[in-house]
Image (cartoon, rainbow, N blue to C red; front, side, top):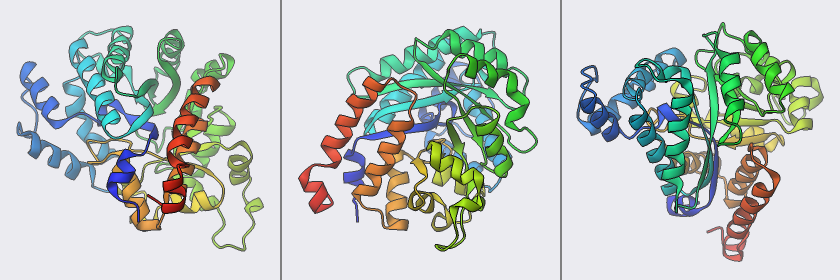
Length: 358
């Protein structure tokens, strides 16, 4: 069994993490006091962290999203956004992450008069500051809110900042009733601009949302994608050819950004043992493991890996596979992928770990 210390020390790649879902409770309290915000459920940082997790763990995606009203309330000026982004990079580095793509929705930070460029600039500056000297690279993904109608505008801003640290585009928010095809104009712009896309799909919705995301919207990664499990064979003798969608994921190695604790909290799975991540790996799908919202789910990538190693009996080679999957699916240039792959292989393929599983 892999120890938490070994997993924490291991170099890791993170593809699915929300900026507004990963604040330190102490930071929320301080920023709320600075802005004279009176709406927090408690101003004790420890109690607030517990409240966030309890609120998130109600087996319903839309209930899960309610807690974001409090994190977003303190992220409405540039200094606050900068601080949150810098602390995000610091916390990810402390968890042994060497490369991360962190997503945020600029349209959720405009309540006090900020412009979209001001929001993006603050996030990118924070990532740069928090990453400096810590052995981590953090890039940004711009999200549009799928229940709103600003996706094309957000896609245009993503392109404006594509050479400054924004490496991809996503849609997020309530899924049911808001299919990816509602935002075709934005996704066609991404395809025309050769700009990478990942889409939240199949988190609580069915496979049709996933199919739309990859076939109509050009997604090369899927956020969550749990709906794909119902397209996979139910036993070892069933043929993968039964599902064209699974075959497409296998042939194109479309990545699945899986987030076990979050998936459990929203009720997408009933237990860690029932989570499809290990089965997806066995089928040859490009599964990755992620945090989603570190504050709400009281998690980090080390914790997600530890839970899965205990649940599924993973060894170090499985963790290495997950990290290679994440790196190969990241939205960064080939030369940087090669550099980071060297870091991964040097660590995971060291003789003491290959033969001693430590």
